[in-house]
Length: 260
Image (cartoon, rainbow, N blue to C red):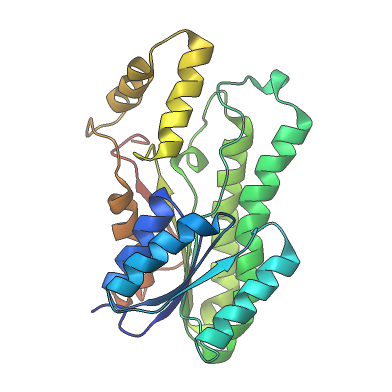
């Protein structure tokens, strides 16, 4: 197995991409700490991991609150005898949908920026000292294809995902001397409950059907099919594994060719 006995933290692990990433890492041998605000959903994912014969520890955590992140990382270190090999930052929010820049409320803009940027920064901040000390580690951040191109009517979200790539590249430069790889996966539209809500929101504003919005996304993709959570999990697995030993500060777009 590619991740035999590796110790991993996955934020935003309760649903969708986060759940798929968690079970994929576990199938390849990783023990996990799964964290999110929704602990009920976390328990379901943890049960799947344990059924695979791996350890799963559930920790409630809001990744924008530093005291909670610090406590979560401390619990992971206690569970894993002081070791953390992998950090995957999945937690994030969508923010205003189909909203022109002049109509975005400043508090809504701030919420997206804080959730997606600080929510990536804080876990890295508190895991980095351990990875530096052990002189190894893999950090994978979930950015987005909207962090590679402009995304009309989604100013806050697009800005936050560009920032995640900036964090990724800068931290890669800082931690490279300690043999810590830092990369990002940039999903496009992914078949999750969040995508359904996004399509519903767009359809409501435009007066379209949900199916018409969905098809618009599909037609924008070179492969003419929507990305599945497992597609994202496979990319994360690659970047978290020894197969990616010489890759750092990079991003992989997993979007069916939306950004081509």
